[in-house]
Length: 533
Ligand SMILES: Cc1cc2nc3c(=O)[nH]c(=O)nc-3n(C[C@H](O)[C@H](O)[C@H](O)COP(=O)(O)OP(=O)(O)OC[C@H]3O[C@@H](n4cnc5c(N)ncnc54)[C@H](O)[C@@H]3O)c2cc1C
Image (cartoon, rainbow, N blue to C red):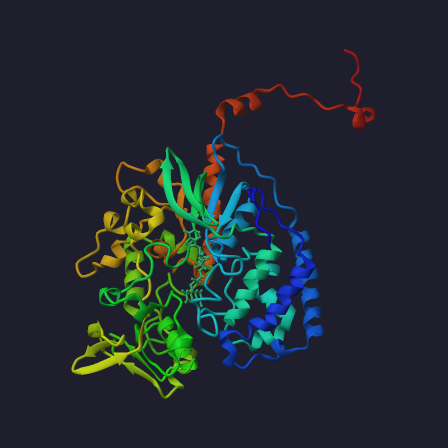
């Protein structure tokens, strides 16, 4: 997709047929990326002409769908002097694309989406996501905002058939990545790539954004900013101090570029026992690692086991179509939901466990925290669990993400003013949780709220659609299940512009203007004549 220089107006382009077929070709290639070991469904091993036919069918169907929903509404947002954009969306991953599309369909113009990544590299699905299949169910609603013709299911079934969709266990990761590329093309969503937000500088209620675009610094002014900047967008990766203290060449966090090819024949340590830990372990083993040792502090690995006679779930849980209502729950319920998530971590899909366990060189160490970790003179890493000594060629930190607004460079000038859960909610005895207290206490449109007297005028214009919103909104924000929240965010932004656009004097002039009757010509001959008095 070409990168616009003047970018405020984004409207759906008709699908570029050649680009579309390039996309269709990628569908076959995509299936053989990291997931090469997985048996491909028959649908993905079909002959090229058959795939081209399917791609053409999808294009026709998409064109019809776009015709049926009609043109984008006109931009109704009243222009404001000295402003470059009504909204800047930071992040062109699945969240940023869908929210941008939603704003356009609401008639909110002068919206621009920026992403620091190069075209084709935004989001996580072809980089740090290493699993074969999405972890979430295949039938969840996605970025299509209720338009079924733009859903993953419509995309996949039209290309591969309904039986192929039915046969899926969950959505193959590379198909999801292909789908998002297609969604972007189908909706004509433009992204300014290689454009990084460096810092937000408040100016009254406006936001002066310091950007770096292809290495060149610039500033642009926005009325609103949406932080759709991903899991690491509110504090970065969580790296335990004992790993951070090591030289950077002997360890990598799972968000980084793990040197898998260099790990052939080597001994690898993985710290952490969540899904990303198992995925990284499996890829290391598939790349020929001799041994992978995974260290879990817990006495068991959590995975979705078959239902057991546990108490029925609380009424606020397990109903994905109303999960956006979780924001309406009392603070105490939201807090305890967070504690529950914190206690369980994320359960690991069974297939991710099986993928690693299939290798003889894979070893899980339960109840095990590495201590005395150090780099040796010959470039190895040593560490102990009890009396057992380990020696690794490389350490992988599968230790998740942290929420720490003070550590997010883009927020350097404003984080002090932002209200956190620790400021607004006092948990009961035994329910304290430092990680929870560090989450921002967000408003009903994902906006930051002020901690005290400072910042109220501009914080309401910074909308936080990333993992930091998880406590306020009850789901890991950015995940597919959180897409039900996109309309809530879009409506909140539109509401603010709508209210601000009210001009009482102009309204009064309009209401009080004398009405002029149109010509009576179309009905004149039927007008009954009244007898003269
Ligand atoms: C390994 C992994 C596996 C996951 N698996 C699943 C799953 O199976 N199911 C599920 O529902 N969820 C899953 N998630 C959670 C979530 O769905 C993904 O993280 C998803 O990519 C979130 O989409 P997003 O658009 O919010 O953020 P991202 O896809 O992370 O996109 C954020 C974008 O913001 C850009 N960006 C960041 N900072 C800046 C800046 N300062 N300036 C400009 N651009 C910036 C980045 O370049 C990036 O392209 C997974 C997450 C991870 C990390």
